[in-house]
Structures are given as structure tokens and as C-alpha cells.
Length: 624
Image (cartoon, rainbow, N blue to C red; front, side):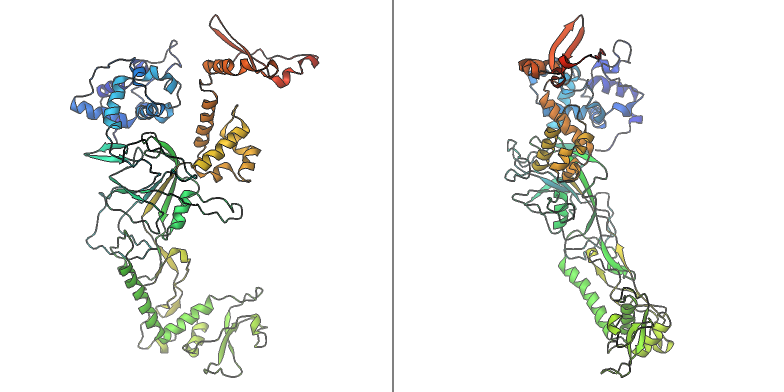
């Protein structure tokens, strides 16, 4: 859905939007009577509170004359019996993320901000407009953005086997959305099968209904696959891939400090891929993302760690023939075109073997790049005279310029025999003149050799120089390999797995939730011990974002204090737990409400038992 420019929306329409979706009190400026009770949605500060998706829906309906409906009943909320996840989804549609944690917009205060007409419009035009999704899918979704804005050239050449992306003229994004789930796999959360077959969250984007992945990512189709692929085909029809992993066993890491730990699911997908990718499989670059269609309820978003990968392209010679990859657009493996590329390289290698200059240049490149096996010798290679010619008529051998070099001690330094096909007289001249070829050897020959090179290799080969001989203007050179870039992108959305959630839960329970912050959790000795000496958010990658740890801690506090942390929560804890404990173990001893004043009397049991041994008491009478 295209974004809406808030500055171009009229004041009347903005006022109608605020009145339609929100309660009247939010339009009232703060004063002494309402200060701090609710936010103020000021029309002069739209970017602070206007949720663009909600405003777009209102504008669209206003153009059709539909939003002016009567609010049926402000008390109908209890009759609807909405689930917490349903209300949370409606809340996220309605307000900006900063207000989700605001006390006024809390789920416990839903009667204050819930409006029937706003909910009805959202339900009918956002939530209900759905197409489908497979119920027990434990999804890893791969998605590329629409290619409608891509300009295609008339000639499309696919040159590649399974390990290289040649993509030079278009920008393609390959995105993976990973949901850690398969019902039979204990590594991942169990997904219930309560939904209808093929139920997905959708949204109207322009004139089409698209499947919604995030608030800004939509796809037309989802294709299901059951294993991590050797190469990911780049779809051209805005299709997502739903990867179901049944009995996958994640490989172990092999690092010095991480040996024995499971690979993260995004690193596993990358390791299975024969294409070369680079990017953030460990630490997020752009933060987390709320992703739809990944949990038990497809409308309930799941916070996912986002790993962004870029294709590493292909390594080519500096003098690579650009015509080979001109207009090349690769989407999937093509072995026939790959063989053609290999044939070009083999033909060039065969022609070089029949060229005397090429043999000299290749051998010169080999000895120039060689290092002496004697670590203390820093001398350059030098042709040393043999006392007797070799069996193939060679009078020299490649040694070192070190003054102590001799045939008797040649095994301690360079000791390279000259191949039969190499003209040692030309080689002697080349070495004496820093790679320049003698004019006599260039008679009738071109001053350039392999100026259009066909050598292209996989980037993981780590090849630094081209294997063919190169000569430019009569000078032998080593031609470095350079990267031929590819614009393909891959995003991997990784929610926490069962194992990671259990680890975080155990760590929180070991420390205790009282006053616990994410930093205290990370630095706690018990957490370090549970993680084998590693940081918690490096063992559980989806928790790299501290906000995820904060949410996990908050969720545990909610379970421990179901009525919240305010007066009602304390009262519930006192009545259900503290009042039933022996006095010696009780922390909350009484709760007093008098003349509008609320007071909680507490005493630490570990300190209370020493009260009769104290000679004096220092009491803090500060009321909080």
C-alpha cells in the first residue's frame, strides 16, 4: 500500500479520523484535571500518533462515503468476548508502537479506548479480508519484492551452474521469512492446526489482495518447500517460499569459543546454499520486525530477528570479457550455459599452452609470487647457473639472490626447475627487466595477451590472481581477481525457537523477576553459566535485540502478577499468596485504604528476625 503524506491531508479529514477511531478525551488538551490520565493527540503533531495504515483506511472509506456510521454501543466490548491476541492486533493497527506500552492503551484498560465502530471497520476491511494459509505449517517464508519496477533488457542470458549468480542489470531481492515451527520437531514451537486450510492474513494493496508478511512487505503467492535448497531460485512473480522443516538436526558450530553450539536457523540456511552470501547472520543490521502468519494465530505478529544477506556475485579476472555477462540476468541454475562458460575458459587455457610467450609469462608469474621456504630469507628469485645442463637442455635453475645460496644448500631456499616449454633466454630477459618482454620475442606478436579473459570462479574459491598469462603493452603482469557484483538480496526473519525460549525462561527464573532489567539478566553469573560462558543473546540469536529480552521479562512478570504491578496487582498478590504464608515468611503484612490514601505495610523477613537484637532502628517514612 503506498504511503500517505500526512502534510497533504486536510484538517477536516484529520479531525474526522481522530473522532472516528479514538475516544473524545484524546482530543482534549492537557490541563490540571486530566494531566497524565491519557495522551493528547494534537493535530499539529501528526507524526507522533497517526498510524498511517489506519488513516489510509479512513481516507479510502471516506472517499466511498462509508465511515460515517453510528457507534452501536460503547458497552458491547464484553459481549464480543475478544481474545487478548485479537485485541493486541487491533491495538497495533490503531496506535503507534510508542503507545502500545502506554497505560491508557493497555489491554487492561480496553474499556477506555475501545470503540465499536473503529473495531468493526478494522475487522471487516483489514482482518476479515483474508486468503489462506496451511494450518500446521511451521513456516520459513522466502519472499522477493515485486519486479514491476524492474526494467528488463531484450536479451536475457543465464550463465550459471548451481553456485554462481550472474546478475548485472536488475535489482532483485530474495527474502526469507523463517518461522521456527514444526509440530513434530522439538526444536521449534508447536503450531496448532485449528485454522482453516490455507488461511493467511491479507490486505488490499492498490487493486490487488496480497498476503501480508509485515506492515510493509506483501506477496502474491506462497510456495511450500520441505528442505533448505542448494540454490534459491529468484522468483519473478512476487512469490514467497514457505520452508517446512520436519526432522531437521541443526549442525554444530566449529569455532574455538562456540564449538558444540547449534547453528542458528539463518546460518543453517546459508550453509546449505551453494551460492555465496555475506551479511548479518549473527547481529541484526536494521533491528527486528513484527511478522504475520507465523504463530498459532496468523493475525498475531511475532517479533523476529532479521538477518540481511547480499549475494557475493562471482570473482572474475581484471581483464574479464564484459561481453560474456552483458545483459545477463540469472534467476535459476542453467547447466547448459555454465558449460559454455567453462568451454571458453578451457579453450583459452589450450591456446595458451601452444603460445611460447604465454608459457614464459605464466612461469614468470609463478616464481614472482613464490616465497622462499627459509623464513629468514627475504631475497628475490634469481636464475642460478647449473654446472651441467639438465636432461632437457636447461642451463639455469630458479633459486634465491641470497649470497649463501648454492646447489649443495638449494633445498634450504628456492629450488624451482624451469619447465621444458619455457624459453629460458626470454625468461632471463624478463626477470632482468621487471617483466618487460624482449622486442625480438614480440615480432609478429601482439603486445597484449588475454586482454579479454573468460576466467570466472566461485567467490568461495578465494582465488586472488587469474591463472591465465596476461601481457599489457609488452609487460607481463599478474591479473588480480575482482568481484563482479550481484544485486540479489536475502532477508531471513528468525523468531525464537522452543529451545531458545526455554533457555531465556530458565535464565529469568534463576535470577528472579523482582526489579530485573535486561542488562542484569545478561550480566548475571547464572545466565553466563547456563550459556556455557557465552552471552545469552549470542547463544539465542533472536534475542539480540534487547527489546526482546525486555518483552520476555515483562511477560514473566505478567504471569507472576496477573493483575499488574499497581494497587490491584499488589492486592491480588497479598490476598492469594502473602496472607496465607506464616508471619515469619511474609513480606506484605497489611494493606490499608483510608480517606483515599492507599498504603502497603511490608517487612523483609530476613531482616525482621533480627529486630530484637538491634540496639536502634532507622526507619524510612518516605511514601511512594
